[in-house]
Length: 110
Length: 135
Image 1: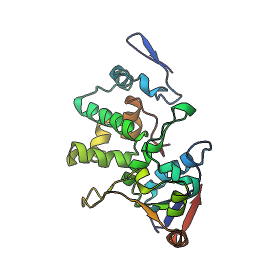
Image 2 (image 1 turned 30 degrees about the horizontal axis):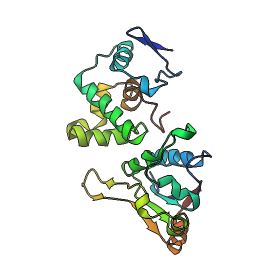
Image 3 (image 1 turned 60 degrees about the vertical axis):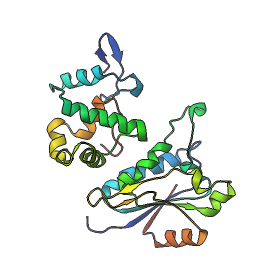
Image 4 (image 1 turned 135 degrees about the vertical axis):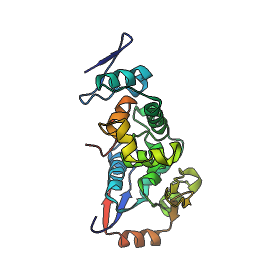
């Protein structure tokens, strides 16, 4: 189902992931969060921005285990655990945060 | 996990033109989740998979070569390259990407897990593996 942000339409696949990564604007994440009844805080944006940087560098969405380790390293040990990440993204930090970030679903995710 | 096995992914084809190289990489990424000892071997045209500076704009395919550089984060400890295959194509270790590995608990690290090995070592490594996935 396509989503609309500021009058622009963004195409998504059957699971709600953005079809064209390059189309992404922050408003996409905000709109997706709104549909999930979630309000994005700076802590959410830290993860979303990290995911976009990771994708830019390695051309894949990281597995959740890799994401957890990387967040611990970059943003501090107290954030590098699944309890913290699931607290932010209750539908799963891999799936939900990647979707907000405009990335494809992480490899190995079902 | 009851038993840890030595998995070897043998890559022998050019990165583009067939789906083998990408499929192999995807299976490697997935198998990291199963806590096995994962190693990769690049031989024949497979050595091209690791070359730096790939540009796929002309063939309309995604350039997935940067993805190899994250394999250290996926618990891959060894990426071997067959020396004879490299030399036959006029390549050296300097033409290949470097892949860092780091244990995030102990901060033990290896600057580059890509290692060029001779044919004898290739045979030895394949013989030592419990499972060889050939792509």
